[in-house]
Image (tube, rainbow, N blue to C red; front, side, top):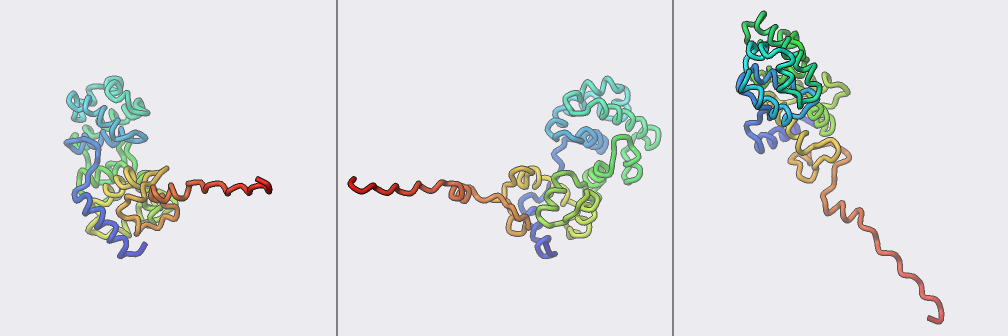
Length: 233
């Protein structure tokens, strides 16, 4: 995919969704941090269901720390791996209070030092909470970048670096959200919805899903050949 095609791709995604954002529900950088830690190997929907119960009760590092691991686990029990996530969040709250005055730091090294926070989580916080043009590559973005030819790479880090090089600067702030939403709802893993994809003509994927009428015509069985009549009949 060349530079002109990459620009066209993001112009179309921007036209469809001028102000993309995360589907996680939050009102402060700290709430976003908790939600993103909980979202590992879980859906945003399941995280939102849990945080709707949690945040009205405890929405600051001190309030969540006061719950303790068992108390927090009770609110996030519906989320996969909730016990380990609860331990990480409690440890993160303690660290925020002791080292950052209870505030979420806005630099990568400090974020990645927090329990349960890796590079992807740090990128989400830096981009969504602090407006930095980072690229948090999850499974959806990894798939879209490779399928389309936007930024092919064998590893998450390679794709991240490729996107940062190739996405035009004016789109970098929102590119993460456009790509993740495109992968979640259109360029899906098992059955990409190519017929309604707004960038299908730019995409280099060689196994595009055909339109429904083409599927029917391709799979419709031909009528059996007429049987020859025997002489005398």
